[in-house]
Image 1: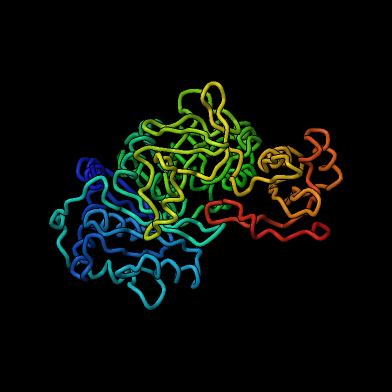
Image 2: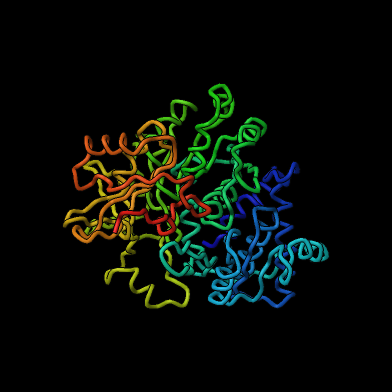
Length: 468
C-alpha cells in the first residue's frame, strides 16, 4: 500500500466531512483533495518528475499540507526543512538533497502563494496515477544534527503507512476524534504522527502555526479537542495553567501524547494531578518513526516509553536499543558508509539510545550512547541524575553531561534552570546517589539550548570554570 491509497479513506471516503480548521476557516476533505490535485498538476507542469526532490521551507500553513499531498500523489520526494535553520544549514541540505526546486516564503525560490494562485487554473482531478510501491521513497527527512552533520533519512511509503496504522490502532484514533496540532510539520512528529493520523482516520484537525502557551487555553476551550500531541517542554509550560483553567482545557480530552524527548516522571505525575489525565509517552526517531509506546488501555508507567508496537522488534545489545520492522528507514541519502554503520550485519538498526527492559516488557531509556559518562571506570547515565534533580523544588529544567577530568577521565556536571541553591542540590545527590554520580558542579543557566522539538543540545552548554 502507498500513502495515497491510505489517505483516500478520508480524501474520497469522507469527502463531504470537515477535515481541517485553519485560520478560522474550515475545509472538507474533498477540498483538501482538490487543492493538492491542482498543485500536483502544477508541479508536473513545472518539470518535476517522480523521484525528484522538492524542498519545503515553511512554517505550519495550509500550503504545507497541499505540497505534501501533491508530492505523495506524484511520486516526488518531499524534503521538509526546519524553519529555524539558517543559511549554513539550509545550504547543506540543498547541496546534499539536490532538489529540483525549493518552496519558501523567502525571496529567490518558489513562493507558496504564487503556486496556489497558478494551481487554481489546473484540473481538480487526480493527475495520471504513478506506480508507487511500499518501498518507494516518500520523504527525505534530515536529522537534527546535534552531534554532527545532518543526514537525510529516506522514509518510504511503507514506513509512513505502518506508522499511521499502528498509532491509529494502538491509540484508538477514529473519525470521531478532534486533533489539536501545534507541532511543526517539518518534523516527523508533526508530519508522520499528526498529519498522517489525521488523514488515515478522517478525524477533524485544527492546525496551529505554532504552539504558544499564552493562547493554549483558548485553543483548547474553543476547539474542544479529544487528542493532543506534544513534546515535554510543552507539558512543562502547561503545568503553569491555573487549576480551574486546566479542568476546562481537559474537559473533552481523551488522550495526551508526549514524544521527541524524554518526559520526566515528575512532569507526568504533576500533569496528572493538575489536568486529570495520564500522558501517554512513546518513543520514536526520525529514522524509524514510532517504535515503542505505553499502552492506551493499560498501565502508562512513569519514566518508561512502554512496549514495542505491532510489527516492531526490539532487542538490547551491549546496553543499546536495536530495532527491526516496517517502520525502519532504508538508509541515509547518498551516505553508504553511514548507512552501513547504522545497521548490524544481521539487519538491526542501532538507535544509539541506551535502555533497559523490565521483566514485564516495559522499556526505559537511559540516554544516548554518546551521552554516557565513564568516570573512574564507572558508567554514569545522565538521565538518572536529571530525573532526581527535576524532583527538587525550584528546578524546572536539568541537564547533566560529562566533562574531561585529569584523574577520573570524565566527571558529571549539572546545568539547572530555576530557583535553587547548589549546596542543597549537592546534598540531595549525595544522599540519593553513589558518590561517583554526584555532579562535580551545579551551574545555573537561564535556559537549556534545545532543538525545535525540545531535545536538549548538550554540546552547546557552556563549560563551567574550575572543571578541567
